[in-house]
Length: 344
Ligand SMILES: NC(=O)c1ccc[n+]([C@@H]2O[C@H](COP(=O)([O-])OP(=O)(O)OC[C@H]3O[C@@H](n4cnc5c(N)ncnc54)[C@H](O)[C@@H]3O)[C@@H](O)[C@H]2O)c1
Image (tube, rainbow, N blue to C red; front, top):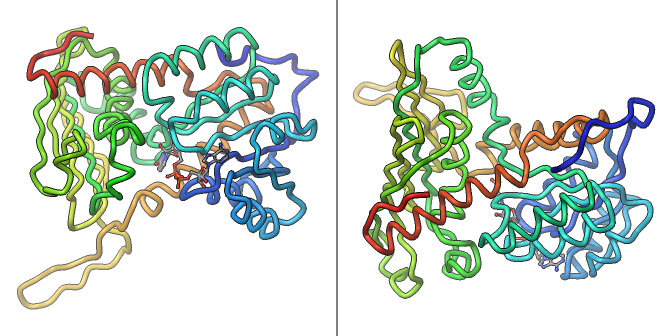
């Protein structure tokens, strides 16, 4: 369920946050809570790497450091738990935090498989704990504006959804293994599949093709480095998601919504607002990575989580949203493996 509206008398002005997992994203989130999110106070951090947790606690001042996340969850001062561990550990942390009736924010994807996601949903439902999932693209000013334009009818009736995600270069082989990240369709495609649902509603069937086309060293991993997935929505509209580990020119996220009266294109390929114009060329820089592209969206997303908890509002993105996007990603993976259309 993920949190019914609270009694107005119980509305809070500030919530105490504990962040679990201080890797690429978790440390940045801890810093955001420490300085950029109103109505939140970072009180604890946890990482199995003690030196990382201690360094963060010392940088962030007055924050408790734990190596065992269960101690952070049990800390009576912690009111909300932000889950930033590797995806395969989301379930155990979320289930523990929900059982302790702490509010929970969990990064995408909800989990690697449906079994874990379903267990998370039942833990959240049975405890009544507030739960919000991270799909930061929904908070990106470009995507949020596109959503408004669609609802205002600016492009008539949307009929085709096209979305493309590209890493600049591949992550480590260890990260790429499906048993660690979930593979291309789960780890990377999940954002595009969530957007597909957000803009067009439920997906009826998928058909994926893909291959190891850029990085021969990925052949033993059992996951493609490039893929195309055709989507058919329940109402007959169509879409396509293109995923690539070899953007090369930069980190590139593009979405096109083709409507009966116009088209919306979301995305940018430039980091600095500078064009260098010379005799034969107009040049600009490129977007280095997800952090640079979505820094503002991460902050807006966390502010939304805190505001929803403090004001007793419903979560913006639920377990069900995470499970629905996961089902599309799992079907896309199966379609690629089996070379056939997969119905959801
Ligand atoms: N929305 C986005 O754009 C985006 C981008 C990157 C990652 N993510 C998601 O964020 C999550 C974290 O990804 P990351 O890239 O920061 O991972 P990471 O591997 O860099 O960091 C994970 C951290 O968790 C710690 N950890 C492992 N087990 C733990 C435990 N039991 N208790 C406490 N800490 C533990 C590790 O030591 C590490 O510091 C993943 O779910 C990933 O999918 C989202």
